[in-house]
Image (cartoon, rainbow over all chains, first blue to last red; front, side, top):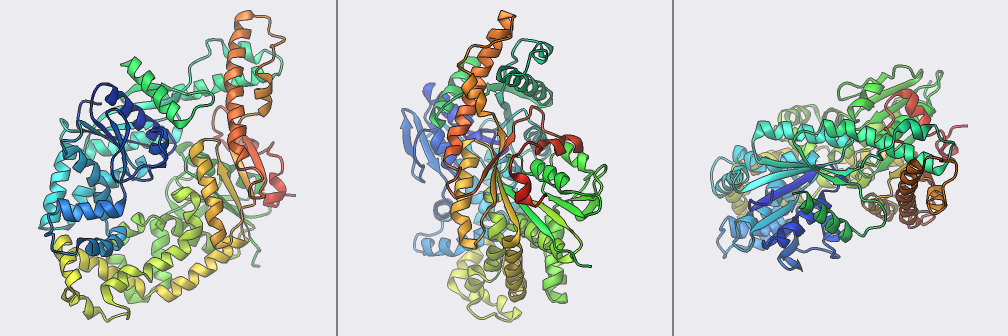
Length: 287
Length: 353
């Protein structure tokens, strides 16, 4: 997962993809890589799991080797137009992108390509060994992954088309880029993960390098019948909830394709920063 | 005879159990001699099976085993087609339906699904044929978009991009073919390719002709929303709780005040209190030790939930109701009807005597 230059992390909303993104960043930095963890949309989750108040469009140092960043669409649009499309500096880029940002809200593919472009531009840069992108939730992932194709389909010629083709090639190169899907062992999360895998298998926009099941409960190791037989009490009720949840999770764990990593449900009080550090320890120990 | 419809809007962040709670509430509201409908958004497969929903359709179908209850699943594209056919002139409607951006934009504009939901809700209320409507909302912006979408949609159509492309006056169609005369547009044209910009502009221009009617429609929809009972569903996890706070902060702008916050997957606080005490009545020492350790963990979770909810309860003068955490999400109509049985205080809020 961590061997390529670009790792995109997605999953259904609420399954813990920002925590896992931060944890993967921590592990890679511990291994001596220069790592950028980048929030593509809504940076609050990633920021709190990295233990900082907020992230900006300039890389912020989190710990040795680990930096954090958030994509801000208007800056990203400037960069996309100015830097990446090599529009002559004499042109009023700022003014142009202000005007175009309105268009970016509506024209199909523009919003997505600008947001999807940023982690790829960073992965091209020599500054990082690894870019981890905390991506939009799985329901929107497809429109981001296929944004370069959408653009090449719409724009017949010119700089935009060339740029989109380059982005598409980078994403699709299994030596350079891969995707990790985070899920929980619950019906909707697993269902959406399976659908995303099927779509990506068809569209071949990117290699899927792993599926991580998060918040997995360990079995209690005592038979459920023995608990049911007890008189009513909080201990009995908590025992039945736990064994019931383990049973329900087992069903969904079985139907997660390519499930190669499991992370436990973390009980008790944890700050988001502690959650990411704990998950990093657990992931590292399991490798 | 036209009925007065009781409308309950169930909102909140994604993944907190809105759709399940909407279905459970609708089953609770349903009576054989009344007509109740639940409008769902993207239900999980097994819930859809329980409600006998097999494809996207705004047309309600009867729920097997629950006399008086119908269910539908939001079909946003169909809702938008309905909007265009109702509010655009026939020739414009025809052009829009053929415009290949129509579907793309209806899907992509972040509040588009929410607007489709509000429009479908309003249409159902206006038929006057329902006693009760339970509305599940798209999760966009933690459910906030459902309330902001009517005005946002009107703004978009009357908005900045179109004025920028065409000037303050609504121009004739031919103007569009000269728009590259403006220097900025010339650059945009070079960067994006002329065909793209022209198509988008033409599309927006067509939408613009609907502006007055859509703005009036948005105002009507907002009135329906203000008359409805709004329930905000959350779990005790930090992200949905943060969304609820944001929801309350921003909702005052549109004069909506939720009637209750529902904490889903709630654990009894009694577990937290019991966690420290010795366990009695479990002779087997191994079982006792296991259950004690387990109660410590879940009791800690119950405590964490209580702490997380302190910031919400009472803060906006809204009751906080708890829906217990059940091991397997309810997926049959019988299980669903049990889910809200012990939720104290809910029935009067939604109008059940």
